[in-house]
Length: 104
Image (cartoon, rainbow, N blue to C red):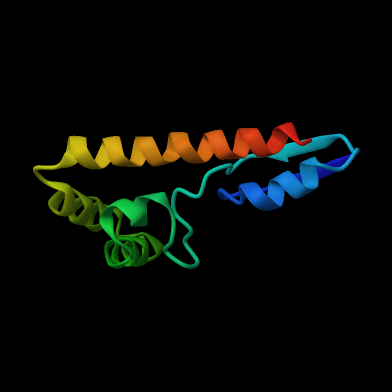
């Protein structure tokens, strides 16, 4: 049995593993919402890497209230648009990961 975890949207790599004849167990983090190492991911694609870096820094320093305030100010007046864009990209990435797990 093959065990993979923390896919973070790497559907191509997952597809290569899924193509083996081994049973496959996939654990969590299927999509790359936010990569705290690089600040890349779906949320950064929607609101920008700089904002994610600033929020990540605040959260890492246990300044959650400030991080929440920063997010609120940055998305003010476009919350629905931001949420919809994140949701659309998440759905697209989930589809890619699910297709990858089908194997050939």
